[in-house]
Amino acid sequence: MPFAPLLLSVVLAADPTDLPLWGDKIPGPVSKDEKNIPTLTFHPASAEKATGTAVVVCPGGGYAMRATDHEGKQIVEWLNARGVHAAVLKYRTANESKITPPLEPGPMLDVQRAIRIVRAKAKDWNVDPKRVGVWGFSAGGHLASTAATHFDAGKADAADPIEKQSCRPDFAILAYPVISMAEGVTHGGSKNNLLGKSPDAKLVEFYSNEKQVTKETPPTFLFHTAEDKAVLIRNSELFYDALKKAGVEGCKLYTEEKGPHGVGLGQKLTPPSKWPTELEAWMKERGLLTKK
Image (cartoon, rainbow, N blue to C red; front, side, top):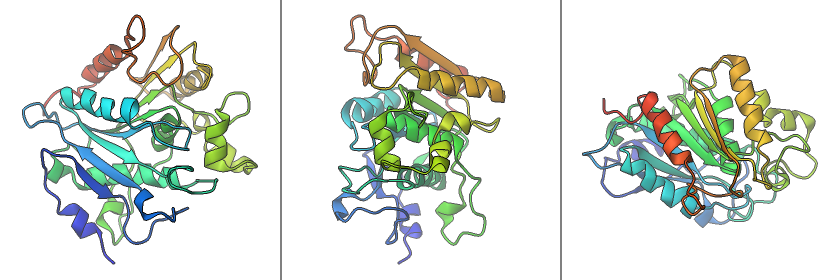
């Protein structure tokens, strides 16, 4: 059953808009529970503040679940307060979606589809299609870094108008992200849920996103703490080093000594983390918080 025309007909509203990512056929591993299909919830910034920038938000959770409060709801509030539209992605996970690992390639297809939808609906949602970013935390950071390194310009001959859109994010924000699938660096739970217990070496290489960075990878802001024992800071360092080597300009790695894994915006730390302030400054420098 055709579904794209229905998606493209939704108009901008002050309240969140919840959309299924896919129509009657979802590519990749699919949940048997209809309540756990992938969705995108668009939270528009107020008309007075809206800059036209939009961010697809990927909460973390080890590819098992999603931390929808401190890596979802609180991020929406932070972005909206700065005039940025937020689109929270409910991507496929192992436990919540009731899919036996491996999940691959479901989550990657979901984040790519989410970026395409935001661009396809740019006019209805008051979004600048050239200022669509992605922000991920932990395993959601791996998904966001996957979006930043595995993308295409759209399929010009696609029957579905959404699939004609590019899925390349214009910028990426990665908070304590899982980046590598390599032993000794990766987060084991995330790797097992995404790739299974005995993944093919080519898949390990494909999803080790520090190895997939090119000059076309978008400008990226990374945050990590040295104290993080769950996802080692080496993940962010590897990605940042790859960005520099590829000549991607406008990138930043901000680190702090203290703070465990999963701090969100870090405002409950003592003292509160300065990383949201650093991120805001970076976004301002890139013109992402300025109305067009």
